Length: 338
Ligand SMILES: [Zn+2]
Image 1 (cartoon, rainbow, N blue to C red):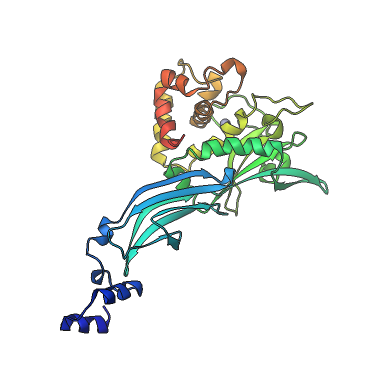
Image 2: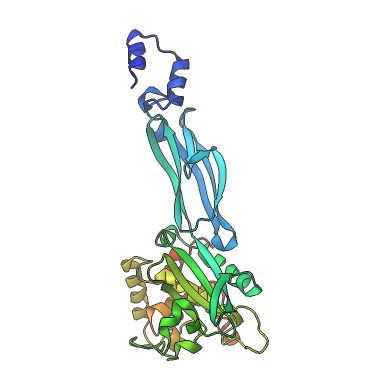
C-alpha cells in the first residue's frame, strides 16, 4: 500500500476517484473493488479449436468480471471480456487467460497450441532435401493430421510442450531411409528386437513410420509416403489412401514420453484382456501384435481411415462401440474433441 493512500485512509478522506487511480497504477488488491472480486471473476467459456495443420489454433473466451477494475490478458496481451485469438507457435506452447486486480492475478483458463509442420522433399545435389509441403500430398496429410490433432485432449498436447510435430512425406520415388531422420534405419528390419512383431520388412521398403524424436532437436517426426496420400500414376499405394498417415500420426499419442505410463499400461491391459481369439480392427494378427499397433489401428478406425476396402465396415467408431468398447473408451480419453 502506498504511503499516500495509507495517510488518506487514516484521515478518512479517500475518494472513489482515487481508488480508481490506484487501481490503474497497480495498487494493492485490497484497496480496489471487494476482496472477492478476483474470486468472482470467471471464464464462462474458453474453447480451443483447430491447430497448426489448418493455419493455427483458435482460442475463444467469455469472462464475467467480479468488479470493474479487473484487467484481462491473453498470452500477456490486453484482452476483452469476450475475445478471441489465433496462435501458430514454432514450438508447442501453453497460453493463459489471466485476470489481474492490483497486484493479484488469477489464471482463468489455459489451452495448448500445438506446433506442427508438413514437409515434402526435393532431390538436390545427390540427396533428398526437405522443403515446406505445398503439394496435393501435403494438403491430404494436413487434412488428416488436422482432424486427429484437433481432437486431442489437453494432456496429450501438453506432452508435446516445446516440441514440434513434423509430418514428412516420402516422395514416391524415394525410400524412407533416404530421408535424414530415418537414415539410421538403413539395413535394419521392422521386427528387429521386437518380440511378437509380425510383418517383418526391411525399413527401406516401408512407406510410413511413427514418431521419431530427432536427436538434439525439438522435432517429433513421422513419415507417410506420397502415394499413400494421393493416387500416384505408376506407384500404387500399399494401403487405402490416408490409412498409413492416420496410423503413423496417431502412434505418438501412446508413445512413451508423450503419454503417462499409467495410461499406456491401461491400454496394455485392455489388449491383454481381449486375448488372441477376439476380432480386432483390420488385419487381426497385426493389430494385436503390440499395444502400439493396437492403438494406431484403433485410432485409424476412430477416424475412419480403413487400410483396405474389404475392412471398411470395421474402421468405424460404431464398429469399435459394438466390438471393442474398452479400446473406444481409451481412444475417447485421448481424442475427445471430435
Ligand atoms: Zn504402426
